[in-house]
Image 1 (spheres, one colour):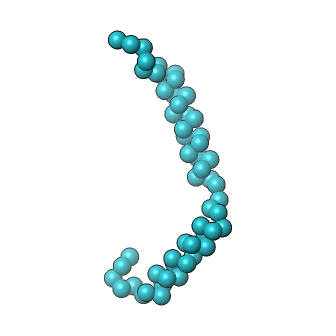
Image 2 (image 1 turned 90 degrees about the horizontal axis):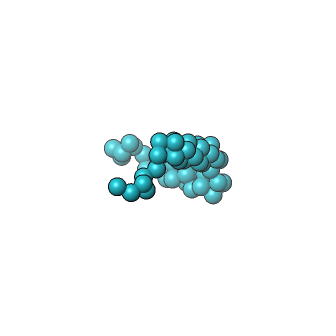
Image 3 (image 1 turned 180 degrees about the vertical axis):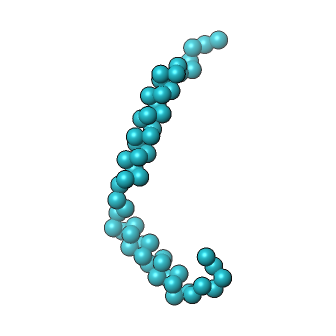
Amino acid sequence: MTNKEPNARTRQQIDENLRRVFQEKVQEELPDRFKDLLSQLKEQDGKKGSGGRK
């Protein structure tokens, strides 16, 4: 059996690093262009009325 599998400490470090990176991404503000596109989609959806879609 080769020793290529990470040990528990290495796995823990990888988990912590991944959590930190993803948490930083979650906390980033959306770019203005993306916000504008979301607003346009909401406006279009509002103009269509309910039409049975939710």
